[in-house]
Structure formats: structure tokens, C-alpha cells
Image 1 (cartoon, chains in turn yellow, green):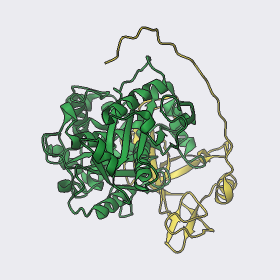
Image 2 (image 1 turned 60 degrees about the horizontal axis):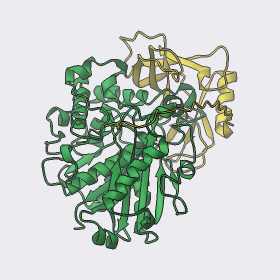
Image 3 (image 1 turned 180 degrees about the vertical axis):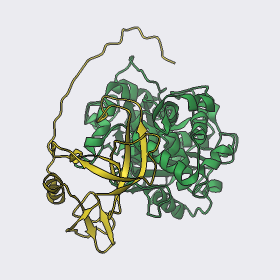
Image 4 (image 1 turned 180 degrees about the horizontal axis):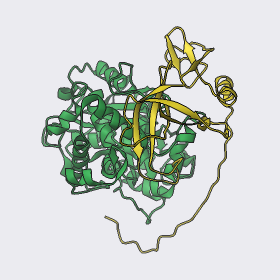
Length: 151
Length: 388
């Protein structure tokens, strides 16, 4: 359906680099410092809803209560769903193939998206029990849990 | 609603992976001129202009400002709307509020995306939560892949079922002169296409399209005076959950999920007990095949766990009893900022009987459309031919 145009299309190239710094806040700071220094994973409890959330936050998403009860969750967890990524894109955090899934840590009511490594691609399954491997070199982000692997 | 609101005109560009012949404003203007022609209206009769696209997808912000020439917004009231994949439907929703409130009579809603000009993959990673999701973020494929693997494990569906959705979409697209991926494919082709992220294959995913859509909304008096085939917006509804990296749910969850909550609220407003019978056609937002099967269930077109049986039996085919996405849907055309508005416009065309090659072969009096965004947010719009 493209019409023949009486001009040659011309393209203008623009490039942009953008860097951001995000302050992690009350719960995020506690979570990341505890992860870095103690290799422990924190969630937050809402006693009114009887739920434990990851990531920890100061307001319950269900009842809007203020939350302050940090609790340790995991480190073991269960794979709730997963995918085996077999294509590569520059934006991907790592090269294919890799397994990406949702891990529900023991004691938590919500899942955490993460990588599943050291796993046989033919054996990975929903319901698989996993445990975290902590990064040796800390980056100060969620990749301080480097990945999860089958127990 | 305080005042009735009608769609009195609309238009879309043809959709394609490459539009080197036009810039963003020129492309968007094509849809706007078609919408004005369709409504037989001049731009100076428009009271307000709402502009929408995906935030930053082309590496730009404030498109409402630098598009004020081609959008027709110069000197007029209006706002820019950015609500992710839902944005085109949100814009119609906001436009309907503008008219229903009595503050404006004629509102132009504009939605576009020129995906080839930006770095969609990189920008999509900025949709993820900056503290918890960004370090792991890839493109949209992962979310739908995990939806697919969860769906299969829960209900016993097979990859063949997602392939059936892939084929239906592209075969319908072949009947739609504006669609992007008009592919004459079979279930085998879909199952043999390249695996991206199990169980999502190339043909299970939407394309990256360039395109625009525009619609003109008006009050009842203007609609009846000026338009031969007004299509009435009867109800709108939106609902949010958190993003999936923080808020995964398997398909069997009992929690109040955005899509089901949204559907139950809009059905309550309209007094709908059997949506599959009440509505004559559906246009749902399905960037991936599995999403369409989940929509069947979340919309209550079948019982939970039976979505894949609907596609298996051909129930949702263009000539089936519950036609879903006769346009070819998002799987065939995804100019993201415009995709949710295209659902509403395509549903309006079905009600008018003006869908052309992809008109469903039955009377269409009522239609329902959905939209996804970010990724756990839905917007729904219910349309009708008459005000009864």
C-alpha cells in the first residue's frame, strides 16, 4: 500500500545515554543492606491481611496499612512458573539460553522473578525446589542474589 | 454516564514494519485526516485533542507539544496520556469522560507508535520496577512465556492450542487491508517457527508495527445530528494490580486479578450475566497467543480451564458464535500506543458494519474490547449500536 513518493526518505540519527540512581527507601535500604552484609532475604508482613510480601514495602497493597514488620523469607523456595529463553537481544541481562522464572520463597505469599541456573533444561519444572546462590562480588541490586538453583 | 457518548468517526493508517516515507507527525496525521473525513468534521469543530503513545518508545517525551501541528491540537485544550499498552483505550476512556461530563462536545482522540524509530527492547526494560525488576528485565516475551507454561501446566493445554490462536489471528489479518502481518500460515508453520522463550515461538508473538489510529467522540445531540452510524460507548472500566515481577499469579489463583475484576465490574454496570451471548464480537489485547486464551477465561466466555477448548472448537473464529479479534488483533498489528485504540475502533467498525473483508457474518449490536498495560493493568470498553 506504500505510495510512490517523489522524494528520497532521509533518516536523522540520534543517540542518548541515560543513567539513573534510585534511592531504595526505608524497606529497600534494609533489604539490600541485609542481603549484602548477611546474605539474608527480607520480606514484610501485613498482620491484618496475614500476608508476607516480597519485595518489602511500607504499605500493604491490599489494605493500605502501614507496614514495619520485616521478616526473613526463604532462602529455599518453589518455582511457580518459568521459561527457557533461547533467543538473544542486546537488552537481555544475559546470553541465551537461560531459564527465567518466578520463585515463591518459603514464608512469602508473593513470587520473585529471577534466573534459575545449574539446571538441566530438560528437568526444570513448575514446583521444583530451589535455593539462592549469592554473588561473590556485590553489585547493590537484586543480582546480589546471583541466581537460584535446584536443591 | 452523565451524558451519552458516541464514536462519530475514526480512521487508521495501514500498519507496517517500515514507514520511511513519513515522520511520526505525518504518519499520525494520516489517521487524523481519515477520522475527520469519516466524521465529516473540520478540525476547527474539535473542542479538545488527546494524544497518546508509549512513553519514551521513540526516545521522545512530550509528543503532545511537538506534534501540535499535525495532531490539530494547536491552541486547543487537551492532555497527553501515557498508560503503557492500554494507552489507546485509556485515551478513549478519558475522551468519553470529557464528553460525558458536559465540558466538551467533540473530542479528538489520537494514538500512534512508530516503533522502528526507537529502541523498544531497551525502553521496555525501563517499564520494570527500578529497584526490584530492572536488573532482570528483558523484553515482553518472558512474561507471556511464563503465562503460557503456567497455563499448560494448570489446564493441560498443548502448544497446538497457542498455534491455533496464531493461525486465526494471521488468517483474519489477511482479510483486513490495514493489518501488518497478513500471513497465510498453518498450525504446522506456527509450531515450526523459531522458539524464542519456551513455549513462545516467533509466530506466537506480535510484530513491532508502525501506525496510528484516531477517533472522534461526541455528545448525543451532535452524534444524532451529524452521524449516520454513531456507535455508543456504554461503559468503561479499568483495574490495576502490581507488575508481574512482584505479583505473579498462576491461572488458578483465587486472588482478585485485574482482568477478572475489570470484567466483573463492567458486566455489573451493564447487567450482563452471559458475556458470550450478550456481546456479538470481542476485540481483545493479545500481544501473545497465550494471552488470548487467558482472556477467554478472564472475560468469562467459558469456564476456567476451558479457554483452549474454545479455540479448538473454532468458537472464536470470525464466523464462529463468539468471534474474537476478527481484525487479526495485536498478534497481527502492534503499533503499541495505538493498539488498544485499534481494538475499540475495530469493534466500532463491526457495529457499523463497515469492517469490510473482516466483517463478522452476523448482526453486531454490542461489542467488548480489552487492553493490557504494564503488565497487570486492564482497560475495557463496551460499545453498542443503539442506546437501548
